[in-house]
Image (cartoon, rainbow, N blue to C red):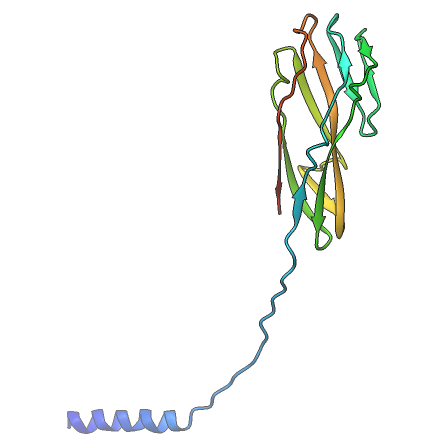
Length: 164
């Protein structure tokens, strides 16, 4: 009797599956490939605060247009060491927002020269909006000078990291 009940159950499953209805739906898979971004810097471009004296504690400021000034009685020297802003080129295949991290060094060459860097366009929460094509990104800022800082010609590297 057990075999008969078991066989009847299997037979009903087969009959049920023979009458089963299948439903299906379709969709699409999409992908878009764009060219990579490029981030470049011409070695001739540097952030140069020019020549000045360290006869007093002061700040040498350089605007994004390379206009230099000094506060608190600092003396600027006009010579062939022309102040310049640094600039980088970011080429983007489309308009987008990217993150830039400017790693400002703690000093320039010696203690007594402390930079504060700014960007043009300004970063908002570490981000910058790019247009499609070439985007010029400038670095400028202030240099705090301590009275009596050792005379010399100083260079200090800094890094900008682009994340997208």
